[in-house]
Image 1: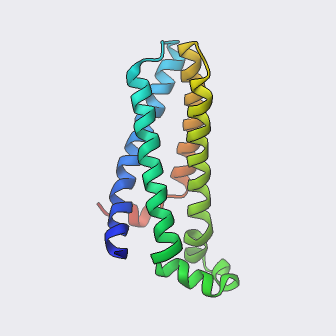
Image 2: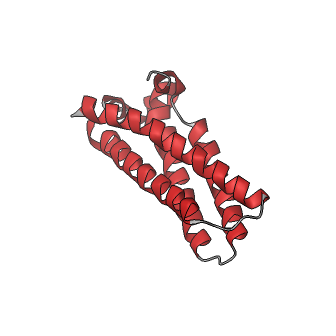
Image 3: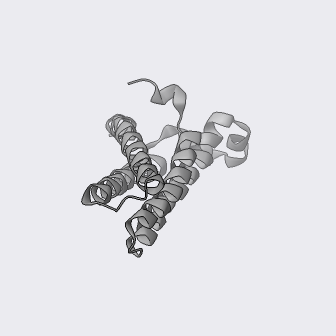
Length: 147
């Protein structure tokens, strides 16, 4: 089960990153061009949210129940904080990804309350760009690069 979910988490991360990049680009184009919000914009935002939710759910299952890395970290949390790899997986990765998820949801919620289309793009662009930067800062690039 651990190997299967690790593979799901790994390959789903490519989809999440692609959806996030796509939504950020659409948002910035819409904001800078003062374009109306379209159903395509809404669908890309919804797809991103769904994919990111699934990704975080799989990550939490790995984190809380299956990962030998987090089990090792929680066995001696003080020592794990001195080990950059264990600290990354036990604290940094999951914390930053949950913050990014919250930003995506808050941005989507705020955007829904706005009537003017280009202003929806502005809110979306700001929240999604910050989420993208956070995600990029905490991707384990050495493992991520292996397709």
